[in-house]
Image 1 (cartoon, rainbow, N blue to C red):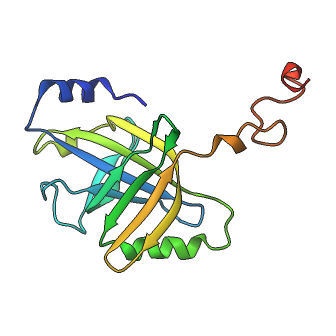
Image 2: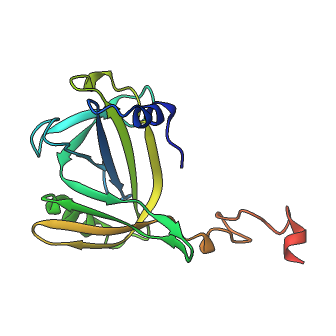
Length: 181
């Protein structure tokens, strides 16, 4: 996980005028379009419930992100191994409730990604790419109530990834016979 050069320079400069926008993307095959949220930084971007357009890839089109309050704790690692991350989203429980209803009957995980953008005041239109893009996380547990939604996020379990046969095979018996003797 590396930061872009622009974000590293912004952090190092101590620039207090710019704002950092953190976005969250929640997706599942049952959804027509991924749920995209942007953390509203001190209401500088608009009112909760408004949408802003941000590119999700360099040079790509700007896609709508719903402004709302959320907190994000990234997954990490300590001396005992990987640690789970957490997301807590306020006042959009209806969005996630509909997602959870749609997940029933699917054998596919809810995927989560987040992006960070460094924006100077009044220059939101100048944003052309995220400064940091983390994708591929999976939501492992979710709790939804009327005011808040909370979920645990983690990297996919690697123990099921490196299998000797099938579509997820990294090291097959025919290509790497020394591993299976």
